[in-house]
Length: 102
Image: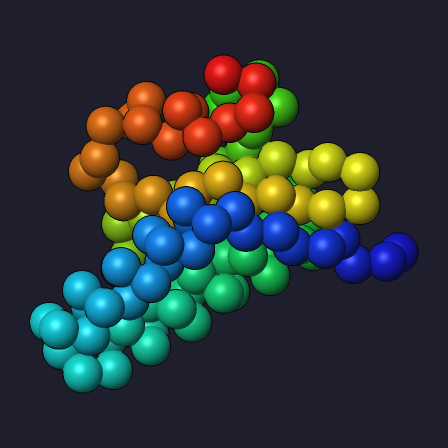
């Protein structure tokens, strides 16, 4: 089986960069730990994208270990599209505004 391409939309890229910076300001190296955990979650999604629960239409949610973040994504053609790397304390409806079908 061929690995699915990972596509991270620009808004999700910005979230990652902002979260990384915030964690690095708290403690040097913590941002790197955060990125490693997000990367491990993305790799798990890539290996088995249907493992994670559908939470809205065809969009799924995967929980990042050690950090209060979830990744919202969708499988489309040969790609996994990541729409949000979302802090769990945010308004849960905020990420839906990014979805093509909303």
